[in-house]
Image 1 (spheres, rainbow, N blue to C red):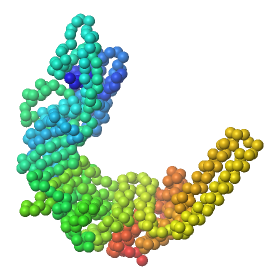
Image 2: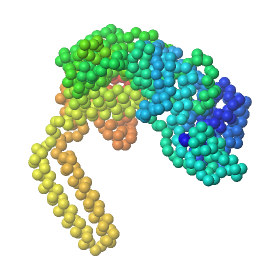
Image 3: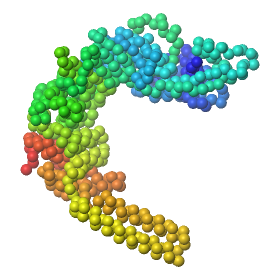
Image 4: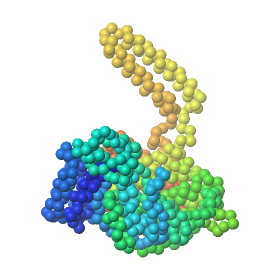
Length: 628
């Protein structure tokens, strides 16, 4: 027999104490516990009246009466106005039904009628929950929700409550109550929940720590399409209630929502699909400013990318990024599909589009189209789920995206974006937009440039001597060092003016000194030309990047070193004030040079004013590339 002891006692006690004390302003009650204490958080919407405080005080008193005096019980009354998130302790014992404003404000892009089951994703789950007459909504901001009736949601809540709890086995011992009331026979344990005193005298053995994995829904649409999706656990309010409390609820008494992620819809489940037969992949994109559709080839005309705008009425919630474009890839060569996949090319083109447009674009869904012999083309649809936010926008480097993509599309390949580090560098550049702190942006931009520098110079020989000659000289120098240090150890050992303890200490320090000498020789540091400044100059010169008008001597490296090693470089080298806008311009020029771009572009330029402000001011300026 498996039962839950402390968990059930705490939850049942609090729920019993709440009877008759719940006001409309009470949003939720959550509890947490250990062996010696119980914590209760009561969240209210708006001002908390004295009557409500008194009601919660009564709840605390009722709970205290259910437990021994040595268990500390604390109840906190917290104002947390809707729709702000309430902190969860261990479980919810009460949650007020609240609407989801994002759903009411955001247009629905697709919807599917669904029937299936709710189950554990990473276990052999024998106790699934049936889901009937539900609807899956895919919203234009990427949110994916399952709408079902409240009875189903409560059954799901109870399943989670039972699944995550620790399970124990109890065996009857010879100890019984003094009143001689006998415990139920062992075979009847599963049919009866023991009263608290009946736990005394039972041998308790932990047999299961509880389920800790994710949950998923699995089933079909009314059209017969296969559906599989993961469930956001935090979107489900865990509660405990007797089935008898809601069996008589009318089946149409409102709806409830559950958040989904990694939703897949297979439109032809009975037909096997091979990745090698993938014909095209379409990505739904948020926050990509495309006005007219366009298409161009890449990979030396072997593959094609097309981009088209999608017109959707935007919701009222301006913090949401909304679907406004689709990017389609097709005719990717078979060897490219196997080695690099469509996802890599989407990632690289998406980074380029984000860089050029100044918008941080994201994909919210994919449509994969497969070629199947003797059948029509088959489709699988994927929705990531979640809710992308509008992120900070930056300078619009390229205003004509169609012209830009058509000119550089063939440069989007494995050699440039993987081997030469262009993809990783653009990721760092995009991450620099995530912070409003200029110092953080400065460091991220430095990292982006150093990524390109590392990939460029790692295959370039910067050695002073050939490896064979260097090794021969290194061995002779290290042998000489070893002899000198050995002589020094002997001198220390024979010195009668210092104690034995002091001798041992100095000798150990000599060994440390030896390691310091040997390490740079082993790493080849003494056989390298220049430092970061020199290697960056080599890279910039190789790609013919004009930088003398920005940093004639790459002065930003000094600020970079002080900021990294000292934490702050002082006002004279403060990157947020002087270097960040120019460093961004240097990075833009480097990317455009690596892509072989020719045409107009935008970069930040210092504004010359008669009256000097405290800090330099910059503005976007249109220029022709490459610069003369």
